[in-house]
Image 1 (cartoon, rainbow, N blue to C red):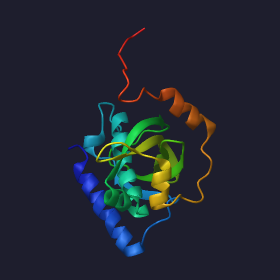
Image 2 (tube, rainbow, N blue to C red; image 1 turned 90 degrees about the horizontal axis):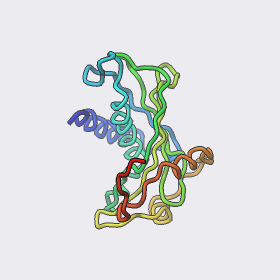
Image 3 (cartoon, rainbow, N blue to C red; image 1 turned 120 degrees about the vertical axis):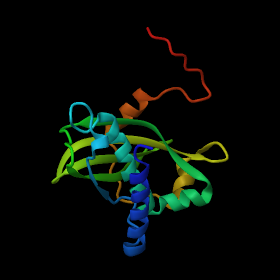
Image 4 (cartoon, rainbow, N blue to C red; image 1 turned 120 degrees about the horizontal axis):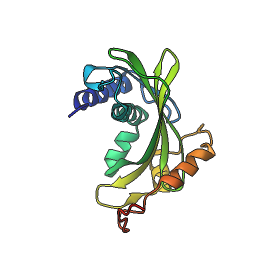
Length: 186
């Protein structure tokens, strides 16, 4: 329930922007303006590190809706799940500080799509997250990128993903859900 109202407002705002301005290109940057609220603050009086990921979800909702991908997924019974993400902090967001969440698709590998979200104040990046996301079927199973791109088109203008992102995705991967992954500390 932490960000449910913000999520609903973001979804409504994205729908309104689509009606007013039309869809944006899948390689475009979408922007959501937010304010750091008292519920976002930790004991050190700045935005809690865990809250960034929840607020970057708002940018993902905006991007999915404004590119038309959300409606295409809904029609086909697909949904996206985050399989991994990494966040880097540069500066702290303070109480009542206004900031933008900028979101963009940055590429794909053989199984997933990658997105980047940034917390930006006056053109300066305060935090950045790289997200690896997979598409699943509500009836079970994974949607391949070939199937995804055949249904919604492959975005033009995506730059090649930096090598470190591919290395990170490989190094941070856990075994598939149907494979054993015992918690053994060595």
